[in-house]
Length: 193
Image (cartoon, rainbow, N blue to C red; front, side, top):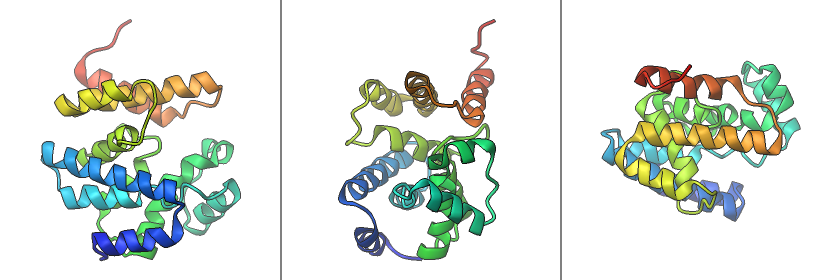
């Protein structure tokens, strides 16, 4: 498996500078959260570095790579291929970067829409992607504060922010994100009728 410096060197040849800056910010944030929430910081860092390696592909390329990898593509994947960049990046991390660790690959695959069944590493990467230092969305300061105190609160806020954004721009809500958000509320017993 490649080490941190080798991964960054390879990413410098494939990612635009802005995307690389984001990936390093996510890696740094994920590593910090992993230390705080008793997860492997090296795994978190690698997942952070590689999570967006397919983010700059166009819709056609994402769909083509998903098909080549035999990934299941739902109607949401066809309607919004950008959401496939997580699962496609997981395949690329395995095939092009030699990552064999299933936990890292799963976190990369889930970072776009989440899941009802997220591991601690999955949650860390999902939150780190939304709060890394270069993010400027309206609720980022509050979510960063929450992440310092309670990862589940930060994760719930990330889902809420993603859903609000989807509603604001008028795009489809991915049902997996809605289910993931609802699963947090049900687990807490914090839902209203």
